[in-house]
Amino acid sequence: MTGLLEERGVASVAPALPSCGEAGAPGGAGGPGLTEDVGAVRQVLQDSDEPTIVVAHSYGGIVTAAAAAGVGSVRHLLLISSYLPEVGQSLSDFGDGTPAPFLNIDTNAGTFGVRPELLVGTFLQDCDDDAQSQAADHLARQSVQVIGEPVGAAAWKDVPSTYLVCTRDAGTPVRLQREFARRAGRVVELDAGHHPFLSQPVAVRDLLLRL
Image 1: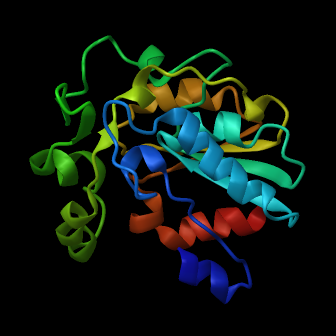
Image 2 (image 1 turned 120 degrees about the vertical axis):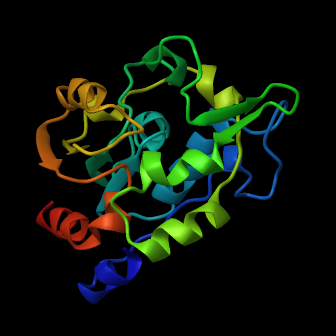
């Protein structure tokens, strides 16, 4: 995606999420959680006064709800197969109280992650062979703290938003996506799985350019 956007003169940045260990600190019990993820993304947004579109994918919708709130440079939110919480809601509010079958939770370590054997079938079934074969190398375990931490703001209430429903997503049910999409200003549907920026990057880029 970065290269496709650069071809059209659009710069992009993907902030590291501390809860996944991307910022150096280990995840897990006592480690960074949603608060630190929100802070990391918010800092990137505040470091620039350029008009910005925030792209939130999956759990990223939880982070963005708080991170983008009140940031003047943020002009639009693009929510891709994304959770879209009200103030006070957490990731745990959108499940049935039991872990998703494609997740492995290590209660001792305080982390969870995608089961490698279910990764492709759940999240990458419409991606090419290269993306599927390399995906396991990019798996990271995340702190369980992010599951129960509520968000303190809902940026989508004040910032124009577009929700991209991925109709072949086996990870975030289409039914749930469409419920969230009713909170967005505009809805677009794409015949894609959970990672359309991998399976149909041109379509995602063109949507961003239209925004």
